[in-house]
Image (cartoon, rainbow, N blue to C red; front, side):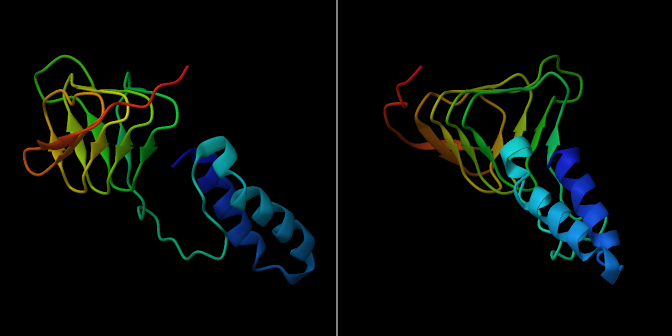
Length: 145
């Protein structure tokens, strides 16, 4: 989740304690609720969120293509002692808790199942799952610009 959504969330939570600031709370709340346009994160101030409650790790240098969706608790990181980080293609779905490790390439339109551990390239249009991730099926990747 981007720092923008979390910053607005925390500000709105603090403002809720002050009844005279109801209009400001509503405005900030709307901004937070709509922040997914900027950050692709949706976090409304009515959510009770403790610190450290959301975890997505994206290491420096990782590339993520357009229209890709990364679920919560996903890690995109290098492997210790191995140079390179993951590259994620366009229109990729990465399920909850998945780990994509090392200099792997995730092809356009690929799907990675929940809690999968991916340490090898994933072909375009492939669906992978498991520990370690194995290909379950493959379809033609989406075409587009």
